Length: 110
Image 1 (cartoon, rainbow, N blue to C red):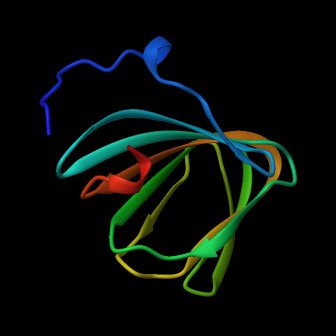
Image 2: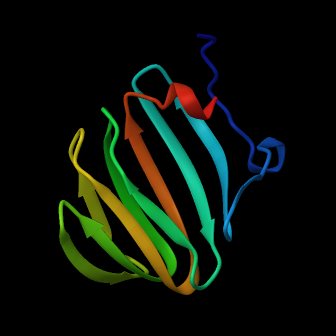
């Protein structure tokens, strides 16, 4: 994998995932990845799991997260942690953006 030091937001394509969700892969290398995810109000990030650890920082909006069956409403400035293989998902209560950090990087996103 090519090592890059700069990833400009203007150069990152905004991918429409459908259902009111879009994402931008902002920066990554083998062991780390940062992704910005945009949600319209009412959009649902279906419950899923993956072998990556994930931290999500709520940039703006309001979300009800379900992590391992535990539900909690989070807003701007809050953070969540998902260990590898734990089922998790979210419902967007007020339109917003999330900053997802993965380790290792998500090969399926690039």
